[in-house]
Image 1: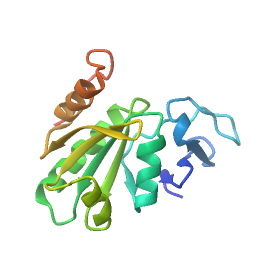
Image 2 (image 1 turned 180 degrees about the horizontal axis):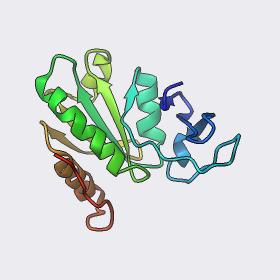
Image 3 (image 1 turned 180 degrees about the vertical axis):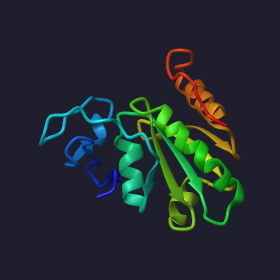
Image 4 (image 1 turned 90 degrees about the vertical axis):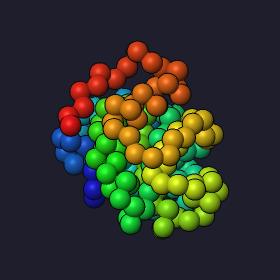
Length: 165
């Protein structure tokens, strides 16, 4: 099992202590759960979640207790490759405050069409199942965090930016 996976009911994370897979229900992603086997506190997802199909995409953005930043990208896109490490930094910086997901527009064209993705990379911020903001084009991690905080109204009270360049 990889460190993070998803299914129709939630995000599945491996316990750092015992390796047990634990499902974190989408509706409870803001909570601090414990491993079902060893009771060690589980860490929130701190890496981007690669979504493989539209059902998982819809489940995550519509039911997540945390805001979800979706990176719409494609393998052939140079700027998408440039922003990928920045997206990983943003996922780590926002662990427990937001979820970062990746949607390959080539593998999921219907999702891209439904969300009017006309240029990539495209960052779309979802809360409560609705898109609340978007930004087309590459940005550094601190710019992405500012984009998220500005649109969530949580400026100044959160993530300490220690972004390595």
